[in-house]
Image (cartoon, rainbow, N blue to C red; front, side, top):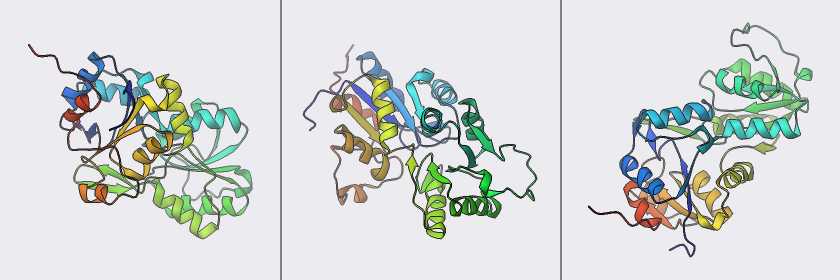
Length: 279
C-alpha cells in the first residue's frame, strides 16, 4: 500500500489502455470513474508516431473523451527539449515522417527530411550535428550507415525512446531500442539524451502537466523497465498492468517490485481510493 493519497494517475497507452484499435478490459469503466471522482489523468506514450492531438482523438473515438493537453509523447518531449537547448543543430532522424514533421514544427532543422528523398543520395556526415533515433518501420541499411558515419564524425546521439519492442495485436515488433543498441555497438558511442520513459525529461514534463507532487501520483503501465522504473524513481505509486508486455511471472521476480500488479483497469478506482456510487 502506497502511503499517500492518489490524486493523479499517469497512464501508458499501448498495452495499458488499448492494444491496436481496441480498448483493453476495464478501460471504459475505470477512466470515467476516476474522472468523476476528480482524479487528474495524463496519458504518456513512448511511441512517437502520432501527435498528442491524434492520440487524444483516438482515445475519444474509442469512448474515452480526452483533451490534447492530457497526452504527452516522447516525440513532443524531444522536440520541446531540442528547441530549448539545441535549436541550432542539424538533425539526421532515423524515424518516420510523422516524427520528422513534428520536429520541424518546433523549428528544428532536419537533414534528408523529405519523404521522397532519393535512396541513392549521399549525405555528408559532416553536415549532421545530431543523430535522432526513433521507432522506424522503414529502417534500412542506408539510414543505419548515415547515422553510423555521423556518429563517428562526432555528431550528438539522441533518441525519442529506447523500447526494445512495440506491442501490437498478436505480439510485438522491433522498436527503437534495437537500433540504439546497434549504433552504440558499432560506433562505440553511448546515447546522450533520451526523451521517453524512464527519462527524467518525460517525468518532469508529466509532473509539470499534472501540477501535483510525485508522491500523490500513480504510474500505470505494462513495462517494468520504462513505466514502472520511471514511477519508482520519482517516488510515485506504481501499478503494473498484465495486459501488455509483462507477465505475472516476470512481475514476481522483478528486482524492484511494484506496489500493485493489476489484471484489469477495472481494479484501479478501488486502488486509487474511489468509492463507487451505487444506485
